[in-house]
Length: 382
Image 1 (cartoon, rainbow, N blue to C red):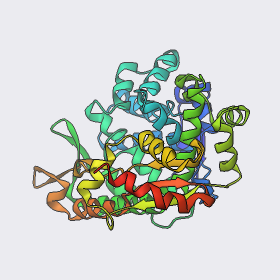
Image 2 (image 1 turned 120 degrees about the horizontal axis):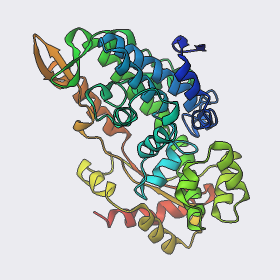
Image 3 (image 1 turned 30 degrees about the horizontal axis):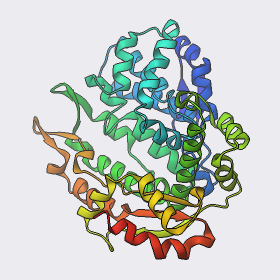
């Protein structure tokens, strides 16, 4: 079976993969958008987890060929690539952020799906689950820092959003990869291609993943999901939904969820009432605020202003760590950190700080009240 993909061209599937593709668990991914609510900003960003999963399966197979893996191992990582996102909830990260606060991880759900589909999987399912979690040396081709997952979503997200900085030399990255010292390493010849990948990641993050309008819509949706859970919805029931099912559930809700989601779909979004970044706070202060409880800050702002619960949303900082880039380069038979052969990791780390802030979102007509009252509440946390 061949499927035409706009990013990778024709993707071939064998009979076992076709059977998995036709399962309800994988078909469900057709109804989950890859970028959640990013289409509020980029109308073309309506591609799905289904398309992405096909791309990851394809690239995982390319890695297997480059690493000279046998057919059994190749099938394991292709299967893991196809199933790695089956644990995602509706609207992707919005539901996952809510689930993670309740100690539920989408990778664990994906592994449960592997168990459900064990009768259709012609591979060692325990190894497939370990690959999904990045626990085997070959698992780093699907769940590592430079992997099939990241290469595909950076390329696909940029393509569908209409951005021009998703040009990644996937062939070079894959062809100059190997297993050494029980981990995936990249030969020095691929350094420039790796730099292009991290550059694309930086641009995608700034322009797409952390666009302020997308972040506001996502935080509003998170709060809507929280409201439904407070009304008795089980978190696993939420995570099993697709976007359409969650859409209907939100609109039929009698809680704050209905109000917030109705505003989202009519693009009557909250605005930035207050934003504090590196110009206002030190990095250390932003790191301290990252550990604060968003709900507690919201509660204090609501008590001081008298605003409704749905009118105030706090987004705390997400600070970068140098440990976020764990890439190894093989040069002259020795293994080095990527930062030892390229200035890119340090530059990326510094640039990432420009996207860090704490923000308070509110209704348009409440901006002046938020500006007047919320800054001191936040500063008192330091």
